[in-house]
Image (cartoon, rainbow, N blue to C red):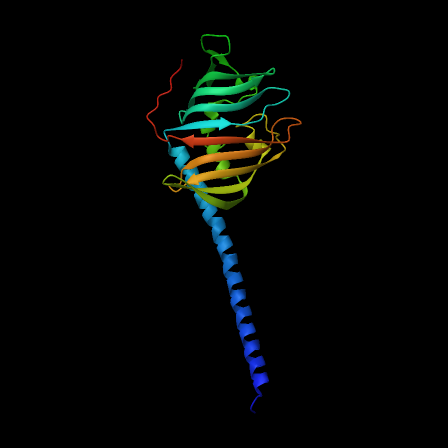
Length: 239
């Protein structure tokens, strides 16, 4: 039977529509596979960054926040060198009884030595009494900085940026307050914290940003940690 031109055009249109639908369905299936592969790629990137952090002989870290509590004591920042002895040497910024101070700290062999305000020598302290962590614990492979990387819930790749010749990829997820608390003691142990991790193209951790409830009645507060100068020849000794 010979079809009229209008029927032929309709037949061609239907065929094209069916083919296009099949193509789109195929693309959709491929996208689903890519998402699954992306999850594996994210896990691998985070695991590599943890391995590199744990293997480093030393790393320089800074921790900052723009917020200040209206009451209570808290750690507001840190700037120093961390090693896997474990040890830390640098300054820790604390907020105590309404006052803010940068306190020189040397933490080694399970003891935290601090040069407290208005003093001229180091004394051994319990950092918990000042709302601060033992910064040497940041090197703990399970409960420290690197341990957080494998405990991100819902981790996804969120973007890339260039810093000179270095490309940094960011990954976002959430951490429970119980995981954040060893790093930032003012964290709410039952809370949830939005977390963004930056990893460079060599698989090295460069940044860690944690946002959530740290201070009463302050709303969401962000702590930013920056890591640099990996594997410098550093020796930390008791002051």
